[in-house]
Length: 417
Image (cartoon, rainbow, N blue to C red; front, side):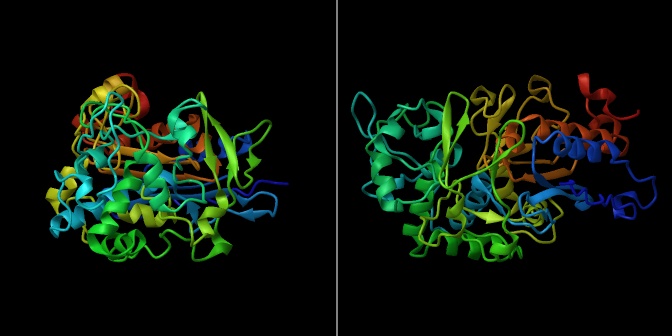
């Protein structure tokens, strides 16, 4: 079955390049083509923005390989942790309205949520600690197969079957990994915070996110249940010699553990709305969200002070949220030391991904945003593909960057001087 390679649209007439030769994205096209030809990913949508304008857009490969359905720019993806920035932004909107308090304990809204320390004691967990993953909570897939979350039957928000109330009860019955505020561990904290947000407002988390973020920004394809199943991509998992169509449920190896997926959750209105992993949406919608963070954005939902708070490194690089040089803000990792991280991105870049096969970043120093959505777990999130995309983006745009903003060190050769 031949692989459809939809022509890239590097917009030569885009405003940033009106008086200069537009950048060449041939290397970026080659990265996408190679990943599909080598059968590392099944399909992808890649968008790149520079100074607020889309300068590259590409849909390639298949939304459904077996049906021969090509990927489209408006294809809908299961977002997994791409959910977190939008829920975090909604939380800051509630803070601005006085409905949440960053330093208040979650028990103000969830009085029964009182996990204990291993040695005893029930410390307070604040909204801030939930947003920054410094709450002492965990994820089942971050633990061994016989870890405490797995033994307690905690859902990571990617499968179905539990109510939010029951999942919060199970989480609260597992001892904390550390005292809140004394460490960093990626966790179900946004699921817990989603419950607090709903209790604080008296409406559901999907209603909150639509009211505060996706509705005002016109993100019509983004929500907690897919509205147009015909555009929903089929989920695949890494396999040899090619990715495997993901069953429901599926246990996909991840490090020394595995991740429990249920692709059918995307159409299940009865599944609890996971604040950390439960949304679906398109690449253009999420790019709209990222571009709303720019200082000069005409469409925005957060004040400049709220954006600065979200993009601040609240943990320090010792968190190593995405390896050396990366701390964590509200909903995403924050680049504290580009040289230590080994990346051409500017200091202050925010970045994260999603285990269904997604990666994205916004570099405010260089005013570059990229959204890379694939339907292939785990390669699309943390394999060679997103790193190669990143380097090709900076290689293409390096000639446009001011000398003091160009990649330094080993990345200085990405573009001409």
